[in-house]
Amino acid sequence: MDCRELRAARTHWYEAYLAGDVERLAQLEDKDFFVASDSGIESRSSQLNGIARSVVAGRWFPPGSHAVDEHLEFRCLREDLVSMYGIGQISTPRGSNPCVIFTELWQRIDDGWKVLHLHYHRHVAQQRG
Image 1 (cartoon, rainbow, N blue to C red):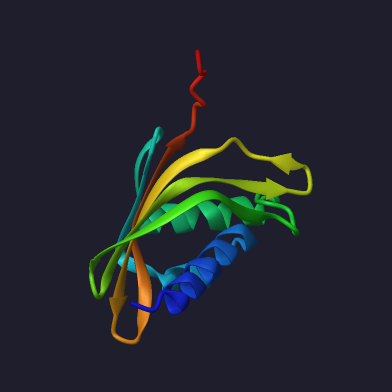
Image 2 (image 1 turned 60 degrees about the vertical axis):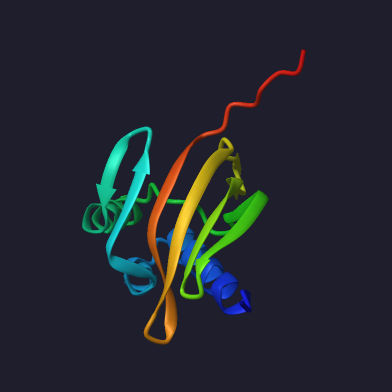
């Protein structure tokens, strides 16, 4: 499978997220999209509404923020279904957020890729003894 189109969709998804562009996020996320994290499970509508409120209040990521993958792996489950997992963080002009371990599930729907869900939690580096 050629992953260039999927990688581009993922890049656009992260760019839209960091820009607080909820309209673009809605296009890239499946209608049943959800986020699972240490805070619990959040529906797509709750996620988008929360982002929109934070943007209006001036509490969203500043311009120049970007996602950084320290490790990223793809696993093709089917030709139209791909699981991604890795370690990453968001870097902002004010500094970097803590690293997280994440999994994403993407599906090719109609003529494009949509993200079905995101799971993440804070990465705690293990000490080597």
